[in-house]
Length: 452
Image (cartoon, rainbow, N blue to C red; front, side, top):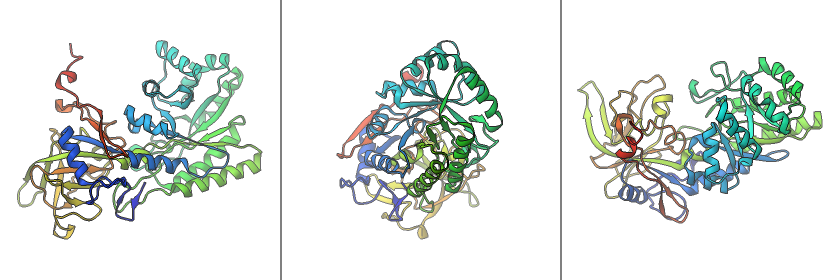
């Protein structure tokens, strides 16, 4: 989604209030906190729809399918919204596939790409999903051996995720394509896998690679070239090439989002060239998650305390939520934009400029931390775990502190119930200007319900 006019992410918070244009004003932030309490996740429906429209318009040669990587945010309402706009589903577990189906998605709109190797009842569940149209993306030799007889007997075409040997990501832990990770069938095992499949009468009608999340667009283009080479050399029956996700978004003012139109033009040119050389028309698939949801989400917290660790130490802003709600700074050293909204609903500070509390030139520096008994509970960490104070005006106790860019891999990847904190609610700000609760706040009784 990137920055809008170089100032803020599309759908981001500004000082103009809710005007129906899609931007969330501080009055909406205040109303969400007053209506549902804090911490609370808030999602902007208009921003989600705009991101879906952008990926669906990505240039392509012979057709495009877009699968939403639901691990980014699997809330049922968001799944219905996103799939209602024309996207299908990329599931990373059997339970994700079940969850998408429970939300109304037919299995024919779901691809399963998982590290699981089902057996027993789980294998029978997978087989039933495949009978109903689920596309199984084989990621290991063991998965292939386990599914062979069923797929062959039922004439079901498979996909294969290929480990390409190259990768790229926002951090080393988000690189899914080089030797650091084990996702997919490695190139060194491809011939073995295909020889076995041919002997069983199996066919692979889709080839899949995914090199990482939030990485270099140049690496994404290189992956297109490599995957088409793999499809030409090893997969003569392939009708679809799935280039994965990993489309970079810009959460912060100094970040640059991937130009998906330019990436689409590049992929289209390479697929058309493949057709001229081979006579094969390949359909394109992509699997964005972060690109769809990240900048449509906000985590609304409240300033509960302030401290300083001596003359040579740090200022600390203490919030009523932190790493248990947004783990990305701790895991990846990821940066998220900050906003401060006063108790009266006034925008005091925005990472993208504006606000009534002064500019960065007059700001003090502070580390933003949460409530967990953990030194890593900070929203301002470097990739090596060091504390990185951020320049912003000093807030008042009771001000709302908003962390932007939290629509993807925040609620879904939260450290739910650490320190016995309850799961936060989720709220959707609709295109019609309504605030709708789409997940209730967990209770302490629910937290302990399964304990014996």
